[in-house]
Length: 431
Image (tube, rainbow, N blue to C red; front, side):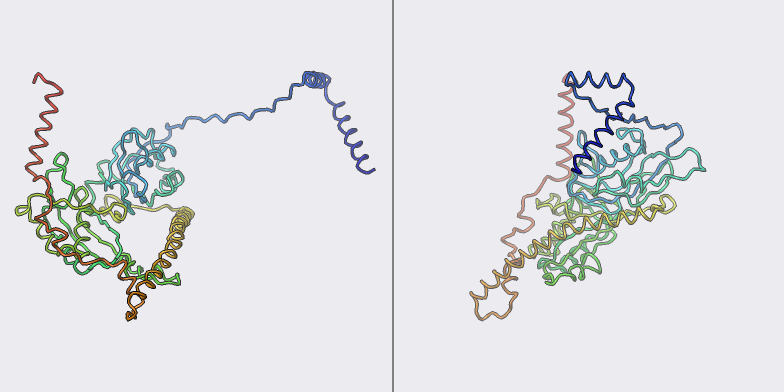
């Protein structure tokens, strides 16, 4: 009974509402109902994007300090028809934030360290002209906060500096520091440090780089310092929260190299030789042999060290030329901390799961080794036998003079010159 009364009340309410409407509206509704045409809903109006007004702004040279994880990028420098580079993503973000007029035409763009594919950086620097208020009384733009809103999650700005018009990020850099991470993994760290000390000083590093006579003719560089040791003083406490302590072979080590400038793939070539020394496949004297370009003018062919563990950790500038500042917003720094912490936790959880499987496999291997040798009381002996590096005799590996060697520098120059003359002939056969 109550439901019927409610229905009657709703019908009467609808009838009273219809009687209050104009006759034209009622007629139009009746015609639409008779023709069985549904009433189309009103479409939302599209927002019209007004073009950015550059009339109240000017440009000024700014140096940006960038940090990025280069694992999924094809290096720093932009490449034609490719956007998955650090510079390509930076240009897209700059155009999206209206800090530049066009990402394809940025005046006075320069880079400090041109990192290769897969290489990361903590303090790389680029310099360019960015939008700035034309009135000095206006507040300056917080470039760090603006860019971090539009950059990809693995690229972020950590600071910026107002520089002079003639500032160049590469030429005005006073020093660069690289770190190459690796596991202890039974390495002879002392021998690696002895070999690394031989790099310090001014040498011809043509046997420790990817030689390109087209872009470089001087292979003399000065190394200020080299250190082989733990990543930092907190390296021993990284796994303190886990119930199972990490094996000493899993201890993270780093090669740290300081210099003003480097050759193409120089750090990876140096690390490749040091890894051979650490695995006892070569003696530390191999560095002296390869640095003697008169005795060994041909670079031996050895496998290049992987690119992903390499990090550009620092670029040094004179504070009078580039005095970097950070964002004045506390929220910007907290967002960056939370963002990086979240990125760190995800792969760490995946690594913890893999670590459980690894420990399980090692326990099976230890049990197997104990069954094979009942008199062995060391519970980690089987683990050592599985993962330690064997001491390979020098003859099996092949000494340096017996390896295949690349062309000498003068041979490469003659080959490059003949190729250049051949290309000129094909372009204009009448010459």
